[in-house]
Image (tube, rainbow, N blue to C red; front, side, top):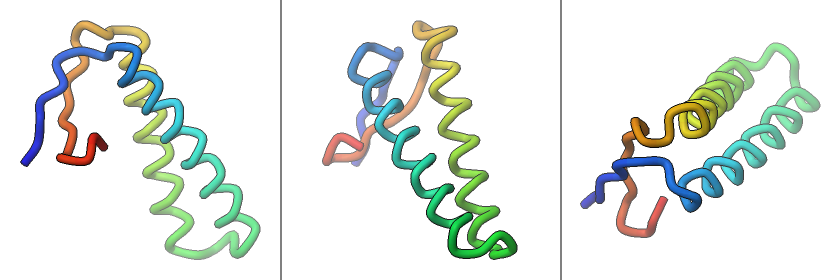
Length: 73
């Protein structure tokens, strides 16, 4: 099951900051292993999506929508 997130409160912004940090680290690690790996492209795409979510949460926090799973992710 999921719970609905109806706006980007401080918890959402904090979680997105953490995701952004992890994503950036993953991109750096993947680039160090191989510049031409297909996995690198997927990791970079995920990192870009997290950046977009983070930006939206800051620019329009009241319009932000999302879901959380049972563990809060």
